[in-house]
Length: 109
Length: 115
Image (cartoon, rainbow over all chains, first blue to last red; front, side, top):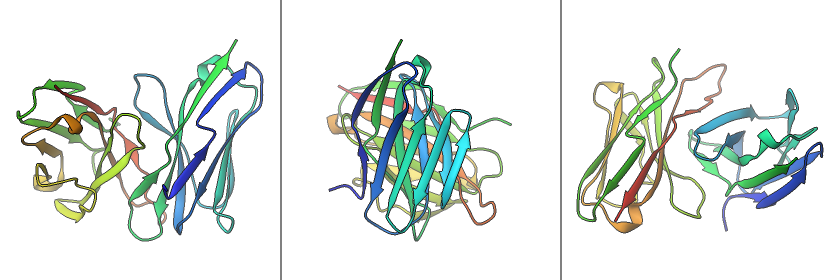
């Protein structure tokens, strides 16, 4: 069992829908990354957070350190949001990242 | 400011050959990381440099993999001899401490195919 679990693995949404991707982890962490990878593209950092909530445009990320859970929300989804979304946790000691398996999101127009 | 760059973007080699991947971190970043995604699996940590020193190499799969960071700038990851299971995408990332945090910035990856 991976230390970082994501759900769902695959998600298909209609344009305009509100999307939630969940990430849970089983070890102590200092912070968590939400990353995005478009097909054939590199990895882009969306958020790094260690508490509370962050918002950037239509993207919102939340984390509850005590409950070992984070969510990424996309409001008013658009086909260009189609990508793989990955959560990655910084281990409490050291700078090593442990990655979830990723969520493949497809937004249909 | 240039981001993390990696070379080559793709490499196709035969089993038994040697391949060297290169990563240039963001200028001034002391921390450099190598990660790998093999098909169908999550991205896994390989190792972490602080300047030219290996801080953590617990993720290196075996002694066919050799990473170096001479001078604390760019890094190379050599696979010798390559095996079929080494195929995957190799990512490099770099970071520098800011307010006690180490946000990592990723390169575009090198897709390695071993035939």
